[in-house]
Length: 363
Image (cartoon, rainbow, N blue to C red; front, side, top):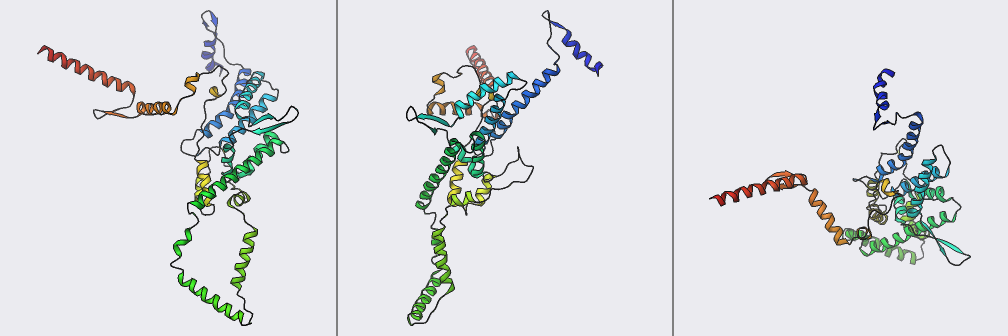
């Protein structure tokens, strides 16, 4: 083994600009590298989750936010063998609190302060539409971050339920306005004979009962029972959805294994006609990630105020120009895939044009 390693060890014994090369890595260096890898895997797994381009990601983002927050907070608060890594994690927590802390203290008076939630709560609402999680997962996240008996836990839980109720009321109004519940009108013509039979039976029943003979039909009694129980238990789709058990996936599934949330809502759209419409709109929101070196950069501002705030006209111009530059351009029935090839083809045509003009001048 030493004979095989000798050529590589000799490399580090050589001098470069009069100085000995640094290396090879010591056992301590490898241990520090291993700790760094265990730290970076937090962001690597979250990047994989949120970098999907062919599936929905809105229901995953709050899971990744809480996962990153808890792990970075644990590393920054517990002294360990790598003090440098702990200090880096502490700086990262400052960025996380700056952008993802949902609570802002609003002083009502000098002695009394209240907390209000300023975070975009749709990130949390989207997790509720994952049938494996519902409100159970959101409440678990609140508990792990703030504690079950904390005011933050109560405030977030109540605010998410309030949003769900207001969304359901809004979509119910749209559904009723668009005539979503008038599907039974198609069978009016086919059921006319049955209606006439029921009417004649009702007339006969009133005549018999009116003559003093007791007459009761069980189907009529059952209809009365259904009407009574229906008014007592007026659960809407939201309550039914949250009351049902969550979907349990097979054991062993985890990172990299996808549960098709959209297919579940498609199959259950008849059972939840209104709530499935809300799910379609909420889950359509895409989430993405940026490089961690950009998100946790300790350097100054990269974009100036003019570039960080673009009008929608300028954004449209930039996007369209980028798509045009990166698209396949066909010239002379030849595929031009890069800008360099495009410029080369233009230069060739210019050379041919100059040669042609020079020949014409000689004549």
